[in-house]
Structure formats: C-alpha cells, structure tokens
Image (tube, rainbow over all chains, first blue to last red; front, side, top):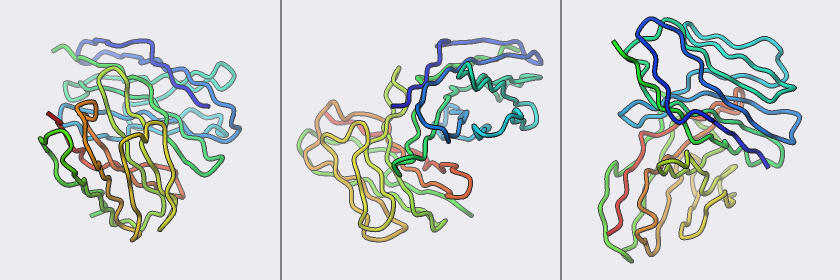
Length: 116
Length: 112
C-alpha cells in the first residue's frame, strides 16, 4: 500500500521569498510517479509538477522545483520568488501503476499563505 | 479544449434521495476515477474505471455506485445518500502516456 505524509498543515512565506513544502511517501512499487497539486480557493486541482521515480534529475517548472530523494522517500516542493497567487492548498501525491488501478494517493495537504 | 466536466457543481439534497453526479471527458482517456475530498483527509479514491464496462472499488466505495457504458462518461451514483457523504467530489481522467490525472472542477454535495 502507498502512503503519503505531509507533516506541515500550514506554512507561510513573504512575497518574493522562497518556501519549501515537505512530503514523504512510502511505496512497495518499483515504478511510480510523484506529483504536487495546487488547490486555490476555486477548488480546482491544478498540477504543479510531476516526477518519474526512475529519473534522477529533479523536475523543474519555472519557479517550482522539487528535491527528490528516492532512498529517503522524500519529495519536497520549493517555490521561489513566491507570489500572492501561490497562496493555496498544496497536495503531494504518488501514483503506482502496478495492478492496473493507477490510483493517486494524496497527502492531507499543506495550506500555504503568502504575505505581502 | 481538453477538459473534464462535472454536473452539478453544487447540490443540496436530503437523506435517501437518489442522485447522480455526471462526469465527462473529451480526451479519449481510458482511465477515469472518482475522489472525495474531506477536510484534513486529502483526496481519497472512491471508484475507478480502466475502460468501458470495467470498474473497480477504490479506498472508500461504500454507499456509491458507478457505471462506464461509454468511454467519455463515468457517472457517480448515490442510491441512498447519507449525511456522511457530504463532501467535495472530483472526477478525473488519466493520460496514459504521462500518467497525469486531469481533474474536473468538483461537485460540492451536501446531504441533510
């Protein structure tokens, strides 16, 4: 069974600063994917960044990057130059492909506040 | 525009009154699923479907039914809703090549 843990229920950052959101996971699968989703007040689930477990290089999308530590089963999200529009709930998720279910397992989320 | 649509977006109903939440995707994805989101619990999978006429239970299937008669549609059925099914529901479809899940806008359900 897969599990995802986000140990920070809430975080805050000053506008233009950098913040890191933590995520650890556990899976028995050898082939899996990791994601960070953003959920603004509109409730829409928006994919921020994805990482294939077989890739050693950390994924980057503009101001968003991850620190993927496979041995430690850690997958943190770094947001650089934080903007007011980054304020949202952030969910870490893992997806295993064995058994055909392709189920996303989510952490409980981190609420990010961006202070002007 | 590639998208997943859900209807209704908001619904208030009473205990025991059957309801259906529709979900449709226009990306020809084979895999679709339903999640519910509750405060402090994140999102949990209710049911999923790997293709037409192929469905299976997720982590929290009790009280729900689904069907997949067409590739694009995956309705969620609550035969006899109860207050503990008050939640935010998301439908999602998966791009096979990138394993990215595209989410619908969500349906806020309140069962009185």
